[in-house]
Length: 466
Ligand SMILES: Nc1ncnc2c1ncn2[C@@H]1O[C@H](COP(=O)(O)OP(=O)(O)OP(=O)(O)O)[C@@H](O)[C@H]1O
Ligand SMILES: [Mg+2]
Image (tube, rainbow, N blue to C red; front, side):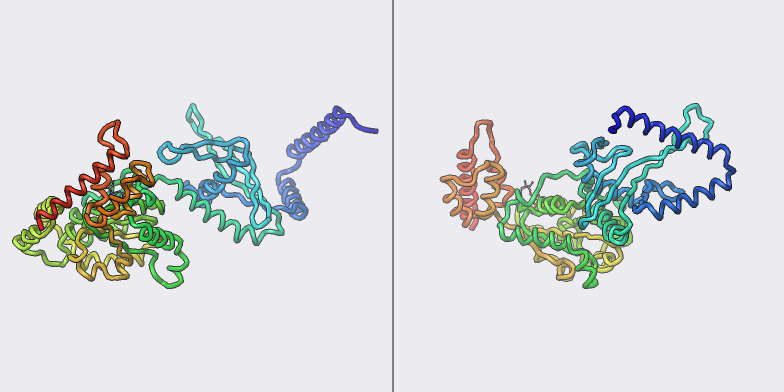
């Protein structure tokens, strides 16, 4: 005889009611010590029969209520996974309100698969009311993630899988973090949110050279095991050199955007001495680019200062466009010449020594307009591993700028520009300036004509001075 749905519900209800009844009797009448014995044995029996293992990861650890790193990593790992499966999600703002992070809500469960083994993650929280004298008692929430898997997969899950989850979770956390641009005001770092739109895609540079730099950076960022194996600190030095306005600073921003690193823009003239320099550098975090711009101007790093007169002569030799920059540097240098004692050897010691003491990847980037003026000790391989020259705008670089600024890949004026750019030296910054629309009705034709005129003017000027 078939049971109707109503009968089935009724019998299910009565089973539940009897369990609750017996449990209440048991709680009430069994002495405490007998009860705990009973619970111990039932637990053992359940463990024998129940084929699953459960691990709980609590949000806080220890007495200091620190957020557990494992919990945070799991939260990040699951946020990318759970949003596809869980039906109830919590939403949080990420990255300066630019995007949402979704994570599973209470009592939600999501399944995950690793090497064809299925596991389940559940999110939950225990709420215990703290005894308190306040009129608004504070509920003490203990949030946790619970991982369930079959005990036959114990080794795989507790070994490989968990370390995979933690690694992935940390990587997601880094991808989602808000990046920072640090600058030093004396011996203190202060920061702002780093939001520079520069990318390698929009950087005007000879394509094969650009590819080489990108590949070098990516190889570096994935090189943790390699650097550990060869016993070298995980760091790489870059020297970017070239005339003003060729994209050195832009490239640094593009590097940070490519690798998702923070930037520490170190102003050497504001650093009092080697000790202060060391302190600043030790404070930098992993996954960062430490930048020292205009290394040739920022300080006379030979250990002894040149005479004022000599430096005056130097300035006369510098091309006109550098003059202003060099003059301000000179003024700044004179201003703090008496107090500042950062030396070349201090800087070199730091580059060689400190890195080995700090874990995690770091890039150090020096920029200069005058590579020939730098002390060879500073830029030898091992300190500055990769030297990248940024130079005047060639035809290939121009095409990238035309695409960025005018959204064109070709134009009848391109061959003329190709010829002109081969003969005349103009920086990408100046080319870009000429391509900027000057009126709201300006089109690509106008901008290209303008650029041709500007190039011809530069040509005439250089012929006259020659
Ligand atoms: N290679 C380039 N690709 C795209 N834009 C560029 C390039 N070079 C320069 N520019 C443009 O010119 C501006 C100035 O460039 P940038 O500050 O990167 O030059 P720089 O080489 O750092 O100069 P300096 O030596 O004076 O510090 C940038 O804001 C950017 O818009
Ligand atoms: Mg610059």
